[in-house]
Length: 402
Image (tube, rainbow, N blue to C red):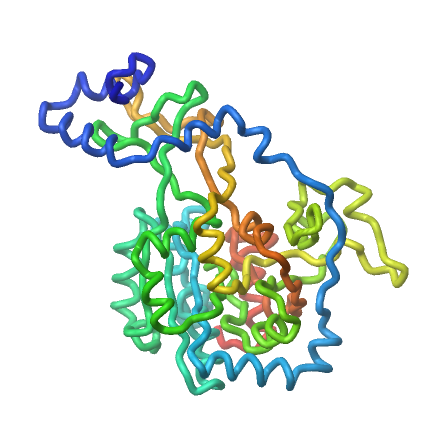
């Protein structure tokens, strides 16, 4: 039975009653293009979120990094110079919470001059490429919503001085959304409601975009993936790369020392003996407050969404199916009467893969400590904690002219 023939699919059927014949043909074609198997995960949504047994994972701390700085730097710079490192910027989001109806990376973070978030991130990468004397291929993941605007922004600003031939854009894959009865929600008369497939879908999206042969042809062995909202992070960091290789690990994660036991950051640890991330809301009070003999928190290092992955290992796990997380969300939709509804409360499910599952599918992961005052300035809001205000303060503290 075709999806539009199912009497339970009230939103699709209502749209078809109101569409023209031509619009219905377009809708049928669109519905047949989509993989609806994700809806099967609704019935087992509780099991995918079940967690195993957590245990602490020792980090490479700042003192050791300083002591072995020359060793790590030499390994990392050599790896960059040999063309074995690529950088992946996750930039699919809009700046809605920042009052910006554009890609988040177009935010002006300057005070007395214009300094765009994208510009600062490219500058951070160029600090490394200038030191290494070699460019790092930069892959930028956009979304259906902001792909055109992001590409145009980079063009308008001449890629902020980065060679355009070293930059590739690809669009994050999308998944359909449904209500609590597994009925397909509609965005319009011819388009189902779709949403990005989560921050764990970036490598699969690269593969779907046809970029895997390029990675292989270039000889890229390591991919450094990072989020758009942290304007201070060092990208393709030779010390981070060098430490991960020196320790013989197949992945690494930049971490910061937690400011307090209840800080709302995910903690890098092990789960059933494999590397994993315990989200702050999953930690018991006993876990959050447990301390080592020296007084440091036992689960004391939070992730900042800056990871280094072995490209070969990513290819292996791309062939395996990553867990699909079923997430309750507020999903705007076209109602049966044709009106557009923006719900005030969650009304259905979105389907996401998470980067924490990528980490858990690795054999090992090196927690690599960075100084939070020099590498952790996330911009989630305009004011308050993790805001544009706090990021500007941290940028100025690092001597960056605003």
